[in-house]
Length: 360
Image (cartoon, rainbow, N blue to C red; front, side):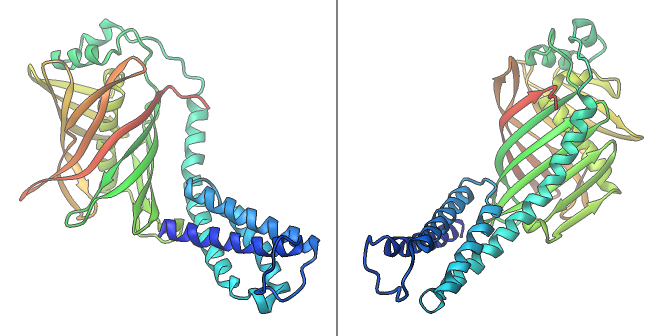
C-alpha cells in the first residue's frame, strides 16, 4: 500500500509535466486540447515537482503532509483550468489530501511525546552527575556488583536520564509479527518513561504512546493519530508500567541500580531480588546473571497483559550484548509472557541507539 500510494503520486506528478512540455513546445500532446501559456506551463511544472517531492518525503518517512496538501491545491487549480482534459486528476488529488490529513493526525499525536520530552529534559538540564564508585556498590548483592563492574559503570557518571531507540517486531497471541520502531526517554529524578512506537500494520504506520509520570501511567494507540484503538489510564496500568520502567533501568541504565528507591535481597551467587518503589507503588523482580556478570533474564509477577486484562509472569531474556559509549549493554532481547499453557514471546527488541544524561 505504501509503495502503491507513492507510485500514484509520482505518476500524477509526471502527468503534470505534459502541460509544461506543451507550453514550452517540447512535444505534442493531443490529450491536452486547450492552449497552455508559458506562465501556466510553469505552474504545471511546479505542481509536478511538488508532487514528486511529496512522494519522496513520504517514502523517506519524513514530514510530507504540508507539501502534499500544497501540491494538491496547485494541481487542482490547474485541473479546474483544463477541466475537460484533466478532470480525472481530481481523484488522485483527493487521495493525496486524505493521506496528507491522516499523516498530519499522526504527527499531531507524536507532538505530545515531543512536548513531554522537552519538558522533562528542561527539568533535568541542571542536574550534575558525580561518578559512581566502588563504595556505591558495597551494599548490593554480589551478583549485582559483578554485573555493574562488567557493565563498566564504575568511574562513570550516574545516570539521571537516557534516550533509547529500538527496532524490532511485536505480536499479540494468535496474530502475526509486525515490525516497529520506537523512541523513548526515561528520567530517574522523577521516575518517568515516555515511549513512542510506530508499528507497521496493514501497510500503514500505527502510532502508540506510553507515558509514565511518577507512578501514573497511560497508554494510547491511535491509527492516524485520530482513532482511539486503545486508551488506558491508571489502575493496574500504573503498577505494570512501574515494572516496565524498572526493566529499562536494569537493562540499559545499570548505574541507576544503586538508587535509594531500589532495595535488594540476595538469592544466590547468580541471582538477586529487587524491590523498586515509585510514588507508593512497589514492584519486585528477580534478576539472573551468568558467569561473565551479564544480566541474562529479568522476571516479575507484577505486570499485566493489558490485551487480556490478566496479571501474568513477565520476563525479558537477553541474548546478545554490545559495547556502546564504553558500556556493555543488552543489544538484543525479547519480551515474554508466561501463560498457563506456556511461554509466549510477544516482542523482539534490537537496540539502535542509547544516549545518557541528555540535555535540552
